[in-house]
Length: 238
Length: 327
Image (cartoon, rainbow over all chains, first blue to last red; front, side, top):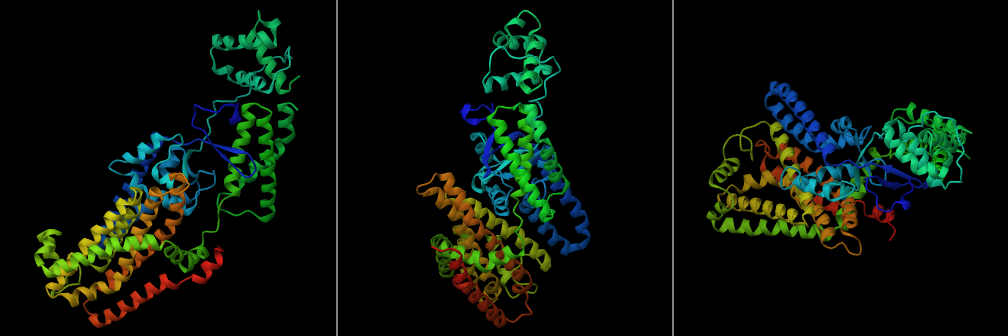
């Protein structure tokens, strides 16, 4: 289940950051593709801002030319820093894709870390088109680019997947025939929550395995309904 | 206790915490009483999450508690004191102290910059043809115009306005400094390259222009802002070398752990050297290029700036830095 020591080698990329309270925050690092989308959006935003400002600053002659270079400098280096330190801890592109920057301890990103990861972007860019950064991200489970490695930051998905853990559909409660260990109880409840998303045949196939043990008398009847009933009983509807 | 009983017993507290976390927009500070209440509820929710995980409660319960504690964690541990006090402390204590404590890196960066500067300077002065092996002829021609006795501001390629020059100095010089810092990630080679290249270019031009007899123009132009710009280049190189040094010789840590620690130390120098480049850009754009200021005044002010900068790194914040880090 959710306790990491029971599954030493995970297939997913969940990243556990332990807090002083003794719980572990489950962070979901974002990979190359969503971050590429976010980058494209940010590039577009900066381009639009720069073109808009250019049209305005062109009226100001040479003074405007100076301001334009200043603006280019700010957009190139400080645009991500300003947004990452603001509420949401994400640039407009990251926010649109549903990403945020946090420290790899799960804490909010600090100014020093944000500046570090964005200045070291210059190394991730090498030799061209973020090749080094992309390579570093593909290399690791937590998708850190070089700037993230040095700054100790992590780019994570902020929205949680809602596909797991729905409440089970209604069915009459039914006591299991034998006492069950906690992991088995959790597996049955989790299965019951997934029933609406499974085909009937698959739900029945999975139910058969458990019903043989927890409700042998229902083996010939409606196995799915029987096992959902057991799930309700385990949840406390008795 | 069944999961439903557990949920029924505690959902009031979870709802209250959810409401309290949602009520305030981020960044706004809650009243002290609210903050204490949020902390209490947050600790309770952490306890409930640990219990729910240990008892293998259903996923929806655990996910709700995970989301709740994650939001509470972000709120409670938000650092909120990067204000004017921290900035003041940075420039009064932390920056000069960081430069002093990394004097080896600064020394290496200084040598990598100053040695080519002096060598090419002497070479270009002794043999004027030498400059052509560093710069192409058109660039040399432009430098002659920039520092020659012609009309227009000193040290400019075109007769642009001061503001245009200021924008260019910030955009170009600070970008090079940032790249010099990031170049340290290539085991320090990138930073060394920037230092040697900049030293070579500056030295050869200085030697050539001196040979042409434009010395007074040239040195009165560079003397003031170079106090900030040349030290800034050396510090940019040093900040990169801190990263490169950690990668080359991580000691008894993993390379990644050493790099993360080095970046935390180097970023203080990056803050400072960025500020120095900004000061240099202001001076270079509005003061150095002004022909109405007599060269003697520029030499006097420039000399004072050099003394001030060197004294700043030698002395500033010594006692307070020593008090802050008992060793």
